[in-house]
Image (cartoon, rainbow, N blue to C red; front, top):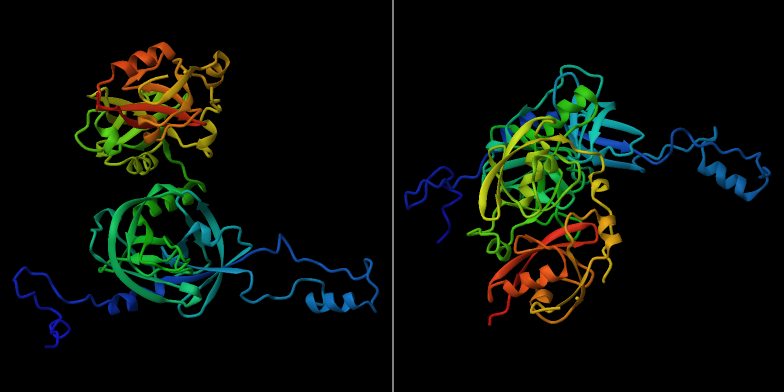
Length: 467
């Protein structure tokens, strides 16, 4: 028996649950807002001016090379028009009738000339007002008026499962429309710490970058930015920058030509299931502080390694990846309340944020714990040399892992050369203290161990062997 789904576009299912079987009609949306989407070509690679060929420098006119270069260069000595060669294609959309256009920063990166092509085939040379690499947002301006601008929505109201539409120029095919649903919100990607991406299954390919993501009301809720792929093509995972984040960047680029973000000054990691137990949590939640940077807002407010940040400015921090976007959008010099868990007790600290440095990694204390003493964990340990303690700026002595044998520490991931700073929430004061802590640890339970490896710090959960 043939399915009646297509014949009943607006009917609820037979169970009476009210689930509508109809697919959305995107035609009115495309007709109305398609003209607001533009194609962007950015010419690159020829330096700051025309390249000149001077045949009198070493080449006689009867030389075969002279004829070769004459064919390669124009008669005036400059490079010939390369057409679309040397151009990277992307998309964008019109923010306002007076010619402001939003796109991705990587679309126009290092561009010598930016060409904006409208749906009616008009072309404009665009001026780059500014770009922000951390959010991958760029703002352009063209000399035009009465342009068809988009209507902006609110990305925070987007729901997982709702329909969305993308319009852009995949592989240079202008004004192509693709649809799908929102798959997830608040996604963190390895290359982007300050953008809580909207994940969709909308088909996005090279050339869609910078184009708008519409909801069913025709409002822009995101800026299509990147895909996750093992082949280079679309594999069902695409990511859009929330429009709320993008517009905050645009406003700052308009006002001052740059973007400032809040800075807390901590290195964080996820609370895993193994780490939740020794920290007294019923389940994994929050952002575990593995290191507090010197002279940072966090240090001045009294945060410590081992604190688990649960809320920031009244907003929940379910995972470590959810904290950087919350901090980044907070204004500089604003004081916020941070709720944290320390030694099993909840407490609040007031933190006044500073501005995120251009290179935050440069502020991480430099040091290289060398490998070079023994116990039930399978660890052979040794004291930290005094000069190395001073070099690393350690407040407490700590101990160094000299050798890792088969046992709980090896299974947890510890290596020779690791510096152990705390054991079961106790700061390690040296080798003898560490041995006492290990011997006193309850058999069969997990303990949290703070380890510094190279320039980074991270907690590991070591489950002690049963008696």
